[in-house]
Image 1: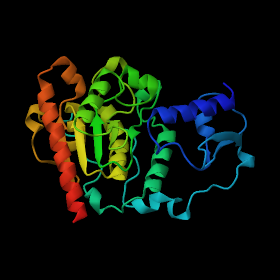
Image 2: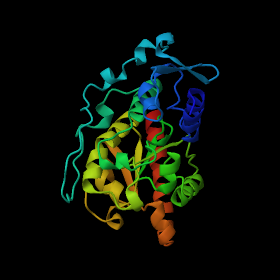
Image 3: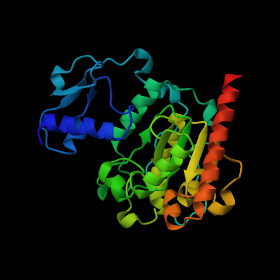
Amino acid sequence: MSRKSLLAAYLRHQSDMAMPDIPMNFSFDLKAFIHSIVPCPVPVCIEINVATRKGTVVPAAQKTSTAIPSSTANPYTRLSRLKPIAPIVGMSKPSVFPCDEDIPISSLPPLTYDEKRTIFKELFIGRCSKCPLSGTRKTFVFGAGNVDARLMIIGEAPGADEDRLGVPFVGAAGKLLTELLKAASLDRKKDVFITNVLKCRPPGNRTPGDAEIVACLPLLHRQIEVIAPAVLLLLGRTAAHAVLGVAEAIGVLRGKQLDYRGITTVVTYHPAALLRTSEYRAGTEEDLQRVVRLLKEDRDHAAE
C-alpha cells in the first residue's frame, strides 16, 4: 500500500468512527502506526491542514512546527494524580474487580476539549497490547462518539462486525442500541461516547476472561477520567461487574442508585440480550428514560 493510500485509509477510518476527537488538526509522528501495517524505512509524519482537515504524508525531516497550543501541549500535567496504565495482572475467578482509583473523578482537574482529544489520540495510536487478544484481533476498537458527552455507555467487548470496522456497537446489537437511544431523544454521535470493557474481540465472541478484563480496566478507567461524564450507562453483566466491582445479577442492579467514583451509574441489559429475550426491552427503555431524567437533573443543577 502506498503512503498516500495509507493516509487516505487512516483518515477514512477515523471518519467512520464518528469521532471528531481522533482526527488531529495538527502534525504528529505516525512512524509506529505505519510500521505496524507496512514496511517503511523512512520516518514519516502526517501534516494536517487545519482548515481543510486534509493531510499529506511527509518525511519526518521535513515536518513543520507542530501547531499545538502551549496550554494543551502536555495535558498529562493536568492529570498528575492519575496512576500510569499498569501491565496485565493475572487473576483467578475474582468476584470483584478492583477500581484503579478511589478518588472522585470530579476532584480531578477538568480537561478542555482539546486536551481530551490529545490524550485520546495518544491512547488510540498506542493500540494496547497488554494481553494475547492483541494478537488475534483485526482492529483495536477504542470507542466512538463525543469526548465532551455527558453520557458514557460501556458494553462488554467487540463482536465480529466491530472487530472488522473498528467501531463499537455496529452489529445487530449496535443497531438496536442506536434505535433505543434515538427513541430516548439521544443522538449517538453528539450526546454519547460509547466503548467496551475490552477493546479487542475475544475469539468466537466468548465471554471475556478475568485476566483480559484486568488488562483492559486501566485503559477504561482512563477513558472515564478523561471524559468525566455526568452519567454512566453499563450494558450487561460484564460491564457492571468490571466497572463497579460487584458480583450481583443485572436484575438486582437495575433501578438501584449506583455510583462510580462520584458519577451516577445506571445498569441495564445488553442489547444482545434484548435480541435473545424480547421481554427485556421494556425494562431497558425504562432505564434509558431514567438516564434522560438524570441528565436533565444534572443540567439543571449546573445551570443554578
